[in-house]
Amino acid sequence: MSAAYLGKYTSGQGQASHHLASYDEQFNCRMVGTFNVQLKGVFAETPCIETHNRWYWFAMLSQGNEGRYCWVTRDKGSEQPKRIVEIITKSPLPDLFKTGQVELEIFDRWPHEQAREWADGQYWFQSWPWTPTQKANSQFVWDTIKDTVDWAGKRVLDIGGNAGFHAFRAAEAGAQCLVVEPSDATRRQGKVIAEHIEQQDVLFTEIDPGRKFDVILYLSVHHRINMDYGGLPETLIDLGNRANDVLVELHTERSDSEPPVRPFTHWSRNEIDGMFSAKLVTYRHNLRCERTVYKL
Figure 1 (cartoon, one colour):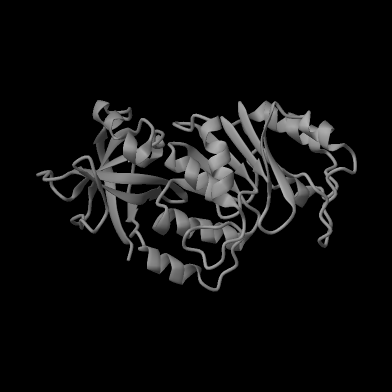
Figure 2 (cartoon, rainbow, N blue to C red):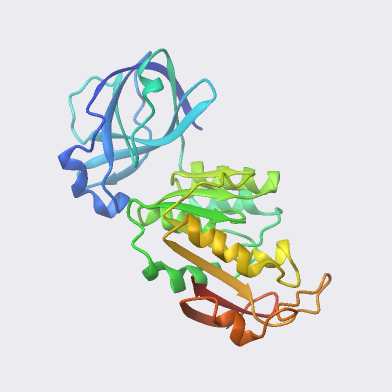
């Protein structure tokens, strides 16, 4: 069960503490903190992540409608009162959290068996180790793109990211990730995955915010917008203007499914290849036709 506490900000540097840089194995980026909160009540040290002689609990700090994922941290053997908690994040918390009452929700981490029980009977497209079916080649695509970007500290937008498989892998590598996903049900799945399974600070939204990011993922999305791949050059120009690194996955073979995907209605395969700086891999998808992963 998750645990919720009320409290208020007491102190904190608001900048990265020098000792936080040594915990790369846990976060893979320089963390910000600590942001200290005094709770109304005593913090219960439930099971959590333990590494480098410290404990970490994944949590949500909120005030009103504003909320941010964060980690509560404590030295093993610390004599600090348990009503005082130290919070670290990948980016500074808004100043509004320094005034008034805040709520801190600590999320329990589900074991593999509980995750499988929750996932059973739901629809899944992306393939996770705990999903009842293995459909999309999720891990294969991540293995293809993971070394093309230095993810540490990067702001990542995953457009049409489904339940967020690639965003969670990027977050694990140190990125701050936002997934654009139009399906309410899938966004709810992503929230559960963030809070109880992956415990990474991945957020989900229905609408693309339109601003700039460091990295944009556009993986097997364009055919959902345009089955005949109309508007592809214009879309790529827009994405390239919004991010330094853009990774794209496209159907590169006609699909006779309903409705059919016809990627070569406007351009040949060579012309599509020429829109990118690098072709990373072409592979046979588990469910539907050949796909190619590119870097813009």
